[in-house]
Image (cartoon, rainbow, N blue to C red; front, side, top):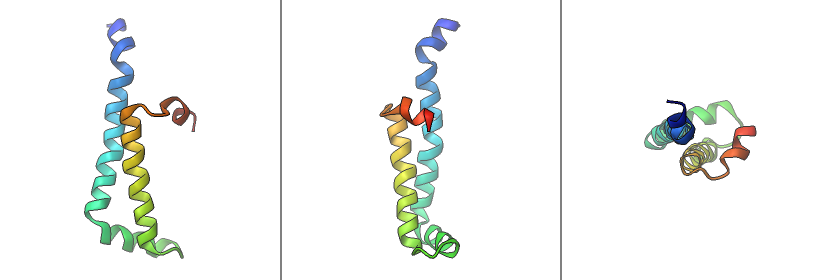
Length: 77
């Protein structure tokens, strides 16, 4: 069991953790108007800009995590 976790544990954890970000970002993208309206009510910055940035970071971060790009550095953040 221990050797299985050593070999596959990081990959399994990355897949499940990245799924949280990818699904969340896809949900925000599918309801872009609602996301932009909500974020626009919170900040003086236009909601469309904030929504685009939030979706970009959620989808981009989830895909980067899934691919393992800069995973060690991101773990420290």
